[in-house]
Length: 217
Image (cartoon, rainbow, N blue to C red; front, side, top):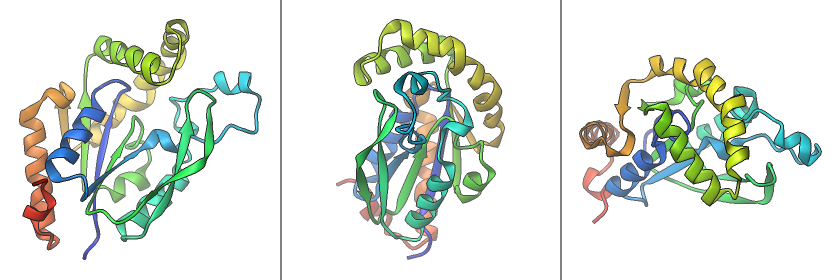
């Protein structure tokens, strides 16, 4: 098989990237598609005191181990397995476990800053930017961090004011210009997502993949 397909799915925190990614996986078939979350590649902060970890800016490009992410994507696109880090968001460190990811036809890379690095962009066959209003993104982030990451409302809002919003304006929003397609409204924009899926199927056909087999029965 020729090189696998990499879809870059960027956008601000809470923009709806995950819903778009899951829709693509559901419609193309989970056995053929895998989602790689940029957040899994946060740098391991186990070596510094917990109080200092909490003070780190997790929305700056330097917060991510981009070199490891590039290496892992290169392996996946060549059909080789990887051991993806598993990140503990409560303790701000990597766990001792990893997630083994093996052969897939389509790789969806999701993250707020995946378009910031030119070497990452060069690997992508399709670049999507999910756009949403700031109030919608903040509401979704509040709900996610409270339910999934066990954080308090005060800590979420403080982080939003001190780093999330300024970093979005400085680093995330400018990368919109690199997108092939901008998806307003996130996963609820069925027309845009259908157009993207059509393009993915076209790429699959070009690379000799049985498109019918790539879809879920």
